[in-house]
Amino acid sequence: MNAAAKPKKVCVILNTAAAGFLHRPVREICNAITSGFADHGIAVEIVLAFNGGLDKRARDAIGTGAADAVVAGGGDGTVGAVAAALAGTGIPLGILPLGRVNHFARDAGIPQQLEQAVQVIADGHSASLDAGEVNGRIFVNNSSLGAYPFLVIDRERRRRGVQRGLAFLLAAIRLIHLFPLRRFTVRVAERSEICRTPCLFVGNNRYLLELFALGRRPQLNAGQLAIYIARQQTRLQLVWFTFRCLLGLTDPARDLRIFHVSWAEISTRSVHLDVAMDGEVIRMRPPLRYRIRPASLRVYVRGETP
Image (cartoon, rainbow, N blue to C red; front, side):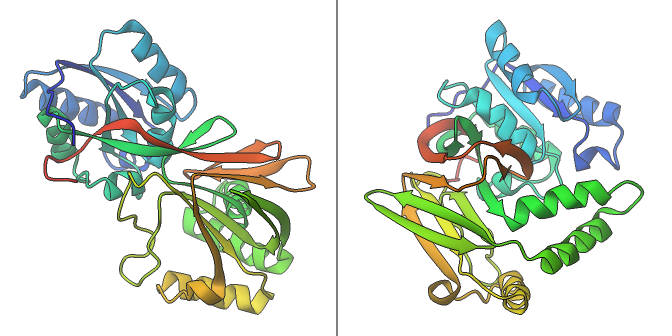
């Protein structure tokens, strides 16, 4: 934990496409943020964005030097984009969880309520947390290949006039029907393995697989990538494996190949790969070179958060 240093001025980048804006008007949220910081004697500049260009806006905020910290208001994709601009700079990152799930904020112990999240930033306590990187791109939660990028792309393709949940269900049915298995060569440290898998997952630090803790990370500063490779399965086994994952009943020894490493290289015969990072999908050219960037993000957290 770094010594508390209360910011005097912050630049808040709000992604107005985030789920938090679906039920509250943009003006109401902006007023709540402005007044919340003003109560602590902190000046605020609010920059509105709509998904794209978030990292550029964060770099512009850094370039002017007018703000002591940059605050990301949105979901994990927003936090990841702003973190990409701040990683390695030492400039503090504040988080206002305005997304649907907010995994990174949750694992960092940041409260989900807007007013309490503003209070955390105003208190000025920060911690040095890790970030993941693949081919020069930063992610704060995870990156995955195979089934999940397929689901995201197919879900978004179907979403015109269809609710999110139904679109995801239709995409999942199509995934099971097509049952894509990918062949990857995974190189870590001094070893190399070839695997055929429906899903390969790279986490920024270790994820818990137990019931009631599934998908959470006990640490964000252990300095490790956690690689989870689902073992080759039939369609029926894949469906059963998915249900057991959701119930926290995964057997790591039987279901997964797991590595905890500082770097990894993943290659395949494909010219391009769809790579999911913090819920967003980007097309990349393999090989994919992953590495952990220890303590590269200075993030405002609660004073008691280790």
